[in-house]
Image (cartoon, rainbow over all chains, first blue to last red; front, top):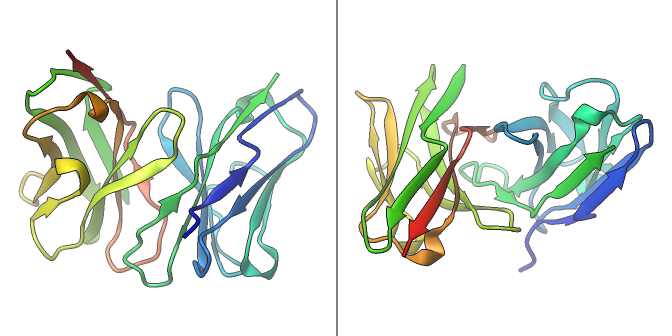
Length: 114
Length: 114
């Protein structure tokens, strides 16, 4: 069974540009989460989808971040326009509904904004 | 509210020695507690999870953790360290019986000395 995949693995962009990160969850996992780790800090929650609906977006830092999950399968996280403080590793995780909250993480996308 | 404190951002142990990584949590509701591990250039992998069923939880690769409610602790141990255990370890908490965001500690990087 394939795990959670994320694309790209690395992205380097200039301040003011736009970047879109993609996450493909494990097949059949209706819960999808985005997290971020800024260098030197802890991993922090961004938002949670249940199927195609946003269940909790309390961790989204500001309106420059837009997450979608069309059709309840893969998800995208767009940052527009990117700022220096957006640099970090963005993790996606997925889990089954009522599956004991066992979240399976992808390898992450390392975003560098210069 | 929930939070996690990991004592020591870096821990070094000799190969074959006991591994002890400390974690204290705070939670206003019954918690799930987790330990995740991140090997270099990989995503987070679940080591073990406390679900209220048993206070001593055994995980993969010989790790175990004990839930102590009176001390609000969930320390991770392994009797004998291997070189392959070198990684970053994260203690984390979420709400029991809920598909919910996970709150992470800052992580402890484990170094194994030959």
